[in-house]
Each structure stands twice: as structure tokens, then as C-alpha cells.
Image (tube, rainbow, N blue to C red; front, side, top):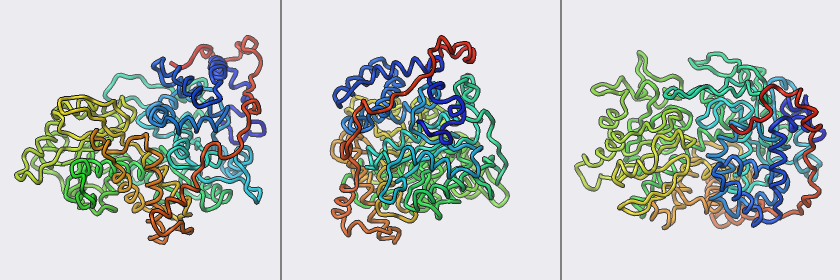
Length: 624
């Protein structure tokens, strides 16, 4: 990391990386990981990571894999490609949530670019410093970057505002860009926008104490609250808007440095910022917000998968969807994006799509309503609900009779009670025609698993095996009287790798919602006989690279047909798929530096000489 100062966390840059990594427990963790990570083959690496996994606490497996990436990134990706089903839950959800909560207690490694509020007017220099140090150079001598995933840590999974410790999300996301999509990891940049941190908010229905992320001695971001103002009734980050917008400067600098073909993906911004920022930049840059559009796409894919499970011969899944009713419980970016997608892109009648917020069913009238922003107003029911309790979920189900229930509340674990599930079953029982009766589809999408609206076991038990279940975090298979069911993991990694790879390879100008609907259909049509037998609404993660290629192929063909592609890859599915395979990065394709040539992480003076200068209480803190 020599030569880098601007693109490091400011507190790390002030102290120096060796000194930072020599603090208290960080030093010991670094030494443990360095000694443990000795593998030179996939088999050896798998044995080492399984050793940590056997402890029953995946945070150590995560830390080991980060060290493996630092020492031998080629081996790291060969390992992930060899065992995706086992390792993806470690490098990404659900483990990445805990990793972000403890990110500063792990050693600082070279990967990751930090852009701070204090860099306003100098963002281009920050990005250029990182690119010059970390990216390969093209024939013109300029750094090559295919894509950037950037976040401000404002809404990490269901864990709240983690500030710069949210860097684990862009890093993990880009790992899946490579494993599932085919991106060259050397041509990607994970970025954190440091605009302050409002800390972790407690769950309203628990006595869990507030976690002081920002006040932690090893928090290396700005130790200040976010500066906000009210816009259209919601609180937004002031630094992201107006003539001196930090986001605008960042995106413009990225395009200037890496060209208009560099994909810029928004990740884990607070909902109040996510929607207006997407609206501001989606038509001017090659960009999208995965929390809104990617989540919407995979949710629709899972819904279509639920239809496919019940009618394997169905080919026009969208037509089948338009005949159903959907209830989205929770009004965060995930559910709002999903509702908007099926209304706008799938052409589902608005009256058949219901969304709730903390005030119950979202409705709007000329005199008012329960919506809180423009996005909620778009999906609002017309007129105030009457004749039932529109604040009670069971009452809502009995009145509106949804075929599909999607939960993405984030902070209401186990809110899909037995009464809720039984109400969903009763909706089908009450239908007069046998042809109209279906199995209820129920999704619990909140992450991590501790925040899930319902467990797989409870869903099958409450419904007596009749419901089709999917979840944001993977649940184990459940054996019951009707057989063994392995619920699908409704995770964006089925969408964003292929979506992004296809868009970049065909040099798309923009990424409209229609492409996300195309991606959803491609995923649903990827279900095979094993998936159907296990009642998984999405394909097995062992086939994730195959699914990624199918999505990328469908996206390219749709982009070419819509006139969005500046580069044509072929006229048929076979031609496009062949072209994309040739463009995919494979580990081992280029000569890799021997491990001995990788610069070791230097430490500062022995801890005994530095203990007196450390903040009180940090000597033995990791991980709590």
C-alpha cells in the first residue's frame, strides 16, 4: 500500500498501515491469519477454511478468505469456483453482515477505495491514486476498470448504518461479480463513500442495546453524524444533492477516468437516498441500484419460479403472474422496487399489488394517505381502506386475498405468524374453482437470518407443507411427510453478476427496468428437474455461473433489440453465449506472481512498545 494515502481511510492514512495493523487485537488477528493461510492449492485452501468453519463461527472463515485473497487472489477465485455453494455464504450473505459489524477490527488490506466528504473537489485524484496502484494498464497506459460497486454504508442489510465498516459489502459483491458473472477482479473497484455515520439503531421490538460503531476505537471513518435535510417529507444526505454533490462528483470522475463503459453500481444506500439518486443518474451513466432493481428482479424471478413449480409446462410466466395478487409487507427499497417493477415492466394491474408500511396498507387520496414518499405514493391503493383493519396483517390477507406474500420488513423477525400463514392457505381453500386454487407463495427476504419474517421449518409446519417458501438467507432443507423441501435463496446474486456482465460486454448505454424483467425470466427458466423436486423457487447455487451466463445472454439480446447496445455480440442466443464465454475472466488465465513475491503486511514496533499509546480497552477486543 506504499504510495497510497488519499484512497485509504483517513485515520489509517494518518497513522500509517503498519502502525494501524499493529494495534492491540488487530496485530494478533493478523498474525493468526498470516500463519493459518499457507495454502498453494485449492485442496489445501479448502482444508484450511474448513478448519475455521469447524469452529462454528463463520467470521473466522471470512477473515481467512480475505487473507487468502490478499496472498493469492488467483487461488482465492479458483477456490470459490470449485465450491460456490459452500463458500458464497461466507464471502457474502449472511456472514458479510457480521463482518461489516466488525470490519475495523480486522487487518487493513489493500483492496478498497475510500472517498470522504473531506475529498470534495479532489475525488478524481482519490480514484486515480487507487487506480494507478491497484489496476492493470491498457495499451494506452491508462488504468482499466470494468465496474465499480460503491456504498455509503447507510443501510447494510438489516443492520442499520455502519458507515465505512460497510466496505465488506462492495468487496463481497465484486467477488460474486467474478465468480457468478465472469468479471476480471483486477479491473474492479470497491468504494465506500464516507459521509459520516449515524450509528446502529436498536430494533424497536427488542431490548438489544445500541452498538456504538462510530465510537469504536478502531472505527476509521469520519466520527461525525451525517448532515441531512428534509426533501419531499424524508430525511436525505445533504452532501449528495445540489451543485456540489459528492455523488455527482464521484460518478463524473469515474466516467472521466475509466470511460462511459465503466459500470457504476449503487449499493446499500438508505432508501430515502437510493430512489432519488437512481432517478438522478440512471439515464446519464451506466448505472443501477441493486437494492432496488436487483432485489426487485430476483423477487420477481422467485415469484415466477413459484409459478413454474406449480405449472412446469408454463412458458408465458408473466401472463400467469398477471392473474394473481401480491402483497408486499414492508416498504423499504426492496419491496418498493419489486412492486414498481411488476407494475411498470410486467404490466401487472396496480389494483392487484398491495404494499404495507408501518401504518398498514399504503393508500392515497386527494385529501391525503399513508404514503411517506413518492415511491410509496406510486404503489399506493386508491382511497382509504374500509371494512377491515388495514393495519393488521391477517385482516389484510383475509380481505385482499393475495396469492403471494413477500416480506422484507428488515426489523420485524418472525412477524409471519402461524395465523398469517394459515390465512394465506385459507385464501386458496376459499376459491370456488379447483382450477383457480394454487399453493400460497411466501417469501421471508429480510437479512440476516435473525431478521427473517419466518423460518422455512415454521412455514412448512404452519401450512402443513402446502406453502412454497423462499428466503433472503439460505435455510437448511426440511424433511416432512410430503418429502424433503430445500427452499430457494432469493438473493440478488442470481441477477447482478449476469446483468452487469452482459451490460458491460455489449457496451450498453443505460440499464432500464425492462432488462431486469428480462433477467428475472431468464432465472426462472433456469430451474431444472432437481430444483422442482426440492421445491426451490430459484436454481441451485452450485449452478450459479451457468445461471449468470443465461442472464447475461438474455440481457445482451434484449439490449441489442432495444437499441441500447453499442457493440453487437451476435444474432442468436448461441452466438451471444459463445461470445460471452470468450470474454469471461478465468483464474489462471494469466501468469500469477508466486506467493513469495507478494509484499508482506508490515507491522509497526512490537506491541509492548506501543501499548501505552493505545486507547483504553482495545488491547483484547476481537471479535465480540
